[in-house]
Length: 215
Image 1: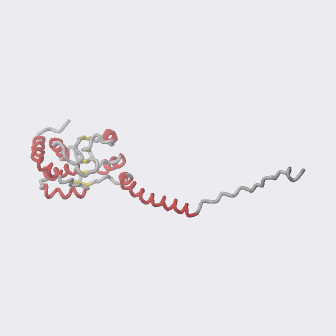
Image 2: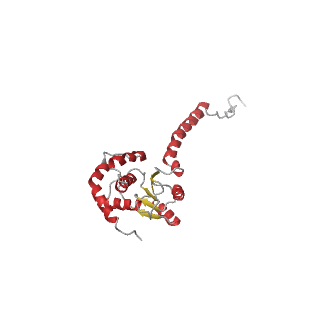
Image 3: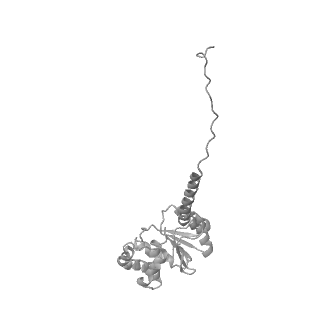
């Protein structure tokens, strides 16, 4: 075979080993993950998880008679009913996603649930608020828990009216308590509402005082 007929054999090289990812890249991923967790976990605790261990915006209005809160999880609802011997739940945010759960628990534990649908900014029908106060002050209903979604606005108005109409405390004296429970003035909508509707609420309440309890 001549030189021109000689076929060259292609040379092969062994596969090069895969290079490991640079150590700096893993350090960056781990650091980023730690930062995300450091931000996300406190938010998740504050927004969701803590309400499974502490009742949302809970407070004592009158010991052994009237309590207030925001919307409770099922776990905390059962806990509060048991701890305080509640006989009545007054729900000011009826129609919320939690309403069916709350009604189911109340039915199971033989607790009276009285639903109201009031505006989230604390305004609403004067007659409805008079009914709320009447139920809060009814010994046959107590101990009572009155709540809305956050426990700030609608529950705040109810407690303010209870302090004023039932306990005889002036609005000016009773109002600062609302800020302990995350009430936001919202350009004084609540006080404007009370200034306009307090006489009607008082009138409705006075008329209900002479009515017999619901069967």
